[in-house]
Length: 242
Image (tube, rainbow, N blue to C red):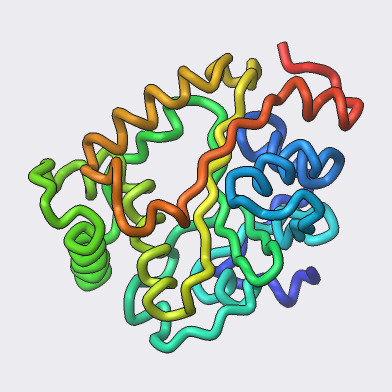
């Protein structure tokens, strides 16, 4: 990507990240993609020889992360309703984008539990009202019987909630084969991350309970995988984090 093509919908990282989930996702995609891809095939119940194509983050693309209409274009989605009518500009920045056959995959990566807590939106005025309306709509659609406190949706777990909201919007406006993939790295010692899948699952269960989305109608399109940083390092020839 050239300088002239960079717009507010993308964030380039010319040198790449030096730690945490950004680093491990970039390293895996560039040098050890199969470490993650085999987890994706298993989670999405794809065939063992199914190809996963990574669209971002890519070294050749300056590790760009996409947001707003730029991620829609990158995934080749044809929306019945413009994304801007659902969510204001400067929406979620996707850690990664991928495709597998006709499936389109939105990727969020985490390396330590603290990343799960985001705090509420910083938007104000009309943008804030648009976001609150979108969150209320998806909460009604996915957790209609939930009596959980609204503050969890637009508070501590706002990031997870807005990703679910985007998945819901895309299923309503871009067909039914869009997926949300959460990558929870284990053994990311550089950020003191969880050392086991069980640690992650406990934190995830707590978060989903607070949001009332332990079970919902888009559940089969939300996937969780737990690749090991030590395996990424071994496959890529990278020193283990200390």
